[in-house]
Length: 377
Ligand SMILES: [Zn+2]
Ligand SMILES: [Zn+2]
Image (cartoon, rainbow, N blue to C red; front, side, top):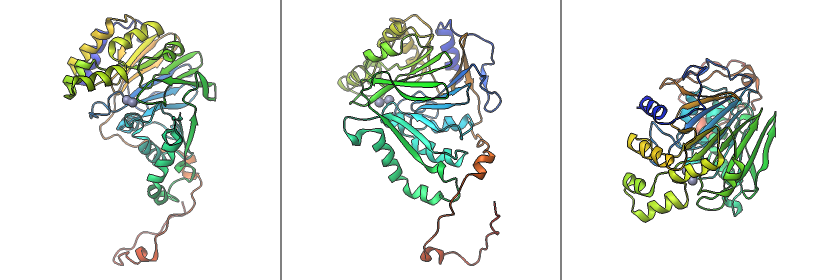
């Protein structure tokens, strides 16, 4: 079915920015991101419900030609698609959260522990906004995760690199407008507020090597996005259902459906209006349930207000972005994907002794089994 969506999308959407000098298919670990390229993968483009095998909740992967990897949101289920890329997890060490709904942060735990098991030997850095009260901010979210998974982390200590188990919060003021939240290695990331549910949703703009990527957090159409996403190369914004479509699809009453689609989110026709102002090289819509009829309705609604280059993203669509072209790709990977290899640095990273049992539990070890001797390394 996914191939069908890709074909329908390509046929239905005029996308003059797309060029062809790379194969459509992208196979994990067969291609290096070139020095002048930005490589983007939609890891999750769906909703909080239903999270399906075909469409996970929000997450975006951005790898740059300088070797840096960034995640924008880590929604529920998205870690499956991240692992499908078989990335170098030593470099998957930064995630930027737009807001703290589960469909945007529900797999931070899987990224934290799964990445640690898969090659990350340095801390995982979580960037995200404050809230209107301290307990509603990113720092409180990260503290909560650390408390929730204290048993997990203690249990793995010693077997895994010490530093890889650390989760570090970098909270910034959600009210800041276009201020820098990250600047390293030629990459600058700024944030600006979004209007969604309660205070504390934001959007991001990443600039590197003359290329710009904008990730819109969930939002009612807002003035900051219009201004600060302007003229960027690759601009992602939610493209939500109409109230009628949502009511029909999810069995909701019209009041609930209208509130959700048009007061805390951006329906497709408003997405089109925003993109007509922003004028990106490629407008990317997400936060959808992509069954064929809905996709058709979404596209028709966007086309009432926007006639520029457009993609309604589906999971594991990918793009190679340069100054000259934006090439649409599709990640092709096995259902039972193998873990990526680790590095010599991971093997050598400091480990501080295995966790120990109490005498009570030690005494429960069955004498009928003798483990092999532990090698020195
Ligand atoms: Zn949300
Ligand atoms: Zn959402």
